[in-house]
Length: 91
Image (cartoon, rainbow, N blue to C red; front, side, top):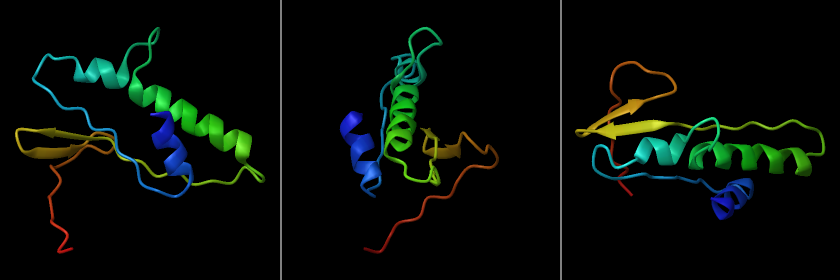
C-alpha cells in the first residue's frame, strides 16, 4: 500500500478492498495480530509516519472509513449502528 499512501498524501482518495469467501483470511490480512500487523495497520502507520516527516506545522486532518460489506449489507465498523444506505452517483 505504499503507493496508495503516497497518492493519498497528494490529495487523492485511496481504497483497500479485501474480498473472499468466509474463512479465507480477509480479517487476518487486513488487521493481522499484535506480533504481525496486517495491511490496514501497516498502511495507517506508514501514512502517519510520512505526515510526521513532511509536516511543517504538525497540523493535518485525516478522514477514513472502515466498512464491511456482508450479504449485500454495508456497515460502518468505526461508528456502528444501523446499516448504511447505498446510493448511486448519477455520474
